[in-house]
Image (cartoon, rainbow, N blue to C red; front, top):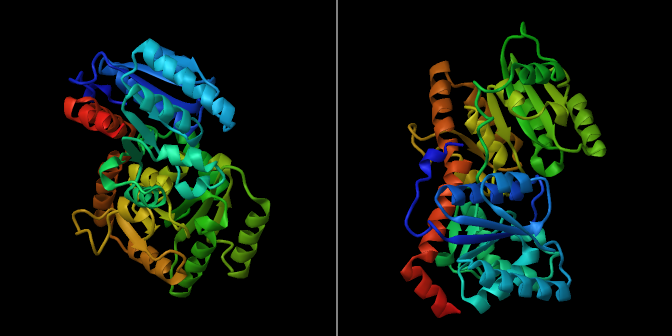
Length: 409
């Protein structure tokens, strides 16, 4: 990360910011919290993080942050009340200026504590509210009560606003904060690309192009639609192109078998290849010419498309959810802004047409689109997220922001 872009700024230097999350494990939310803590420390603020212990505690402390143990995974009403008292005491003892919560569970406790102390209350949705239906209603309600509610896409802002009744003034679309440092063609270890090519049965002598579909192996990610689209392209005379379906995470054995049967039934055994989770990641993207994100359901963030763009791959994506906003494409985007192609979700013919258009790009057109894609991907980087989050904090801590918050308490 390039921390030179985080100067000391009025409104944050000397302030104490408390973030609350379930645990400082190695997951995406914990790393997101750690990145914010690092940014706070670098602008002269004091970052506190409350949650259950995890392997990132050492990284937090090395960055100048402090960890406070909290039973933050609980949804037990008595324990939530106890957490509210703990946080309220912590706010007074440590002179906390602002609280930022990153999960449903601790949101109710933090909301109660901040309302009592009249401190700015920030919340973050890292998932669609539709994915947390089993969470007790009171906990879900509290996450929507932030003075600022942060979401990683405009699509998710719409869903959160509708489900929680949040007015637009409290919603802020913030970069999802992906660490894209490893998604640079010049930084990908050669062995990573070699491993992927071996797994996919690709040889150096093999001519043609490689199209990559990299996602979890589940029906909602659209692998079946891609196979049907490839059959249409082959019927139309497509040659010298290999399509690789790469599985992220645990494989669902039954679904993988279904994919194998569909590939065989379509007579595409030499053209469509399946590789496992061990061969996913930057090495796979570095070996490809184009990326496909064929999700059948709206994506709340669109990570796969962002990582593909960071690697300079034009992406063919479903025109739905966050994908529709993060991949500028025709007709809304002009030639100078296009970084990929959008197609109707679940439509094999539309996907075949999008793939055909992408495969028809000249070398110069593809390189220009690749350059635009790499530049565009930086909008979703960790550096951008840090700057955006700190801007929200400053706005809530300035006199006008504080007066508005106090009036609402």
